Amino acid sequence: MTKKKSTEERRREIADATLALAIEHGVSKLTTATIARAVGLAEGTIFRHFDSKNEIILAAIERLDELLLASLPDGYSDPLERLGAFFASRVTMIGARPGVARILFSDELGLEAGEEGLRAVQLVQQRSLAFVRSCLVEAHARDLLRPGLAPEDLMIVVQGSALALVTFGRVIASGIPPEERARKIWDVLASMMGR
Image 1 (tube, helix red, strand yellow):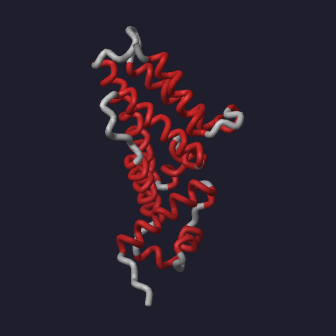
Image 2 (cartoon, rainbow, N blue to C red):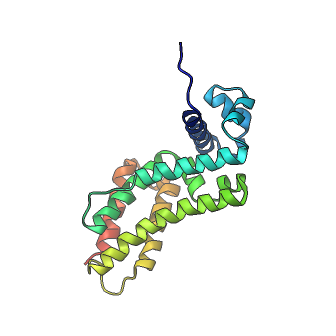
Image 3 (tube, helix red, strand yellow):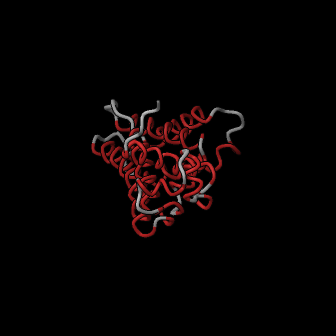
């Protein structure tokens, strides 16, 4: 006899399935029917766990945030090494699943859930930027950056490099594994930024 899942387990399962569907097939393909099918429920049954499709989308955005926060590196005392680990892991993770970039770098998923969804996606984006900024501000405070380089300017360079790699990585990688390419690009950035 199979054990009945708790509401919390079902909510997480539905949010995870929604996120996976959005990543793999795009937000435009998200319907409550496809979400229900993905978790093996009747369409109406998902509304025992959520009041609306918007609420399901918000839960999926929250799961994305949890997954991205869990991937933040720790254990690095050097802020540039910490940032390098973040850069390599984030570029590799997003490069392996291009749909993540579509969700992270656009408002598509957020718009599906209205203003609250838009704010939730922007918060996810801001958390990543805040991590990059905190590493660069710490590196600046510890005098690890070349003179004249401002953390705010370097944020754009780091984020732009990450975006270029996940957007054009397959085109420019020429057979180099994504993680290796990310580390090579990070080495270039670190040599330009560091003393």
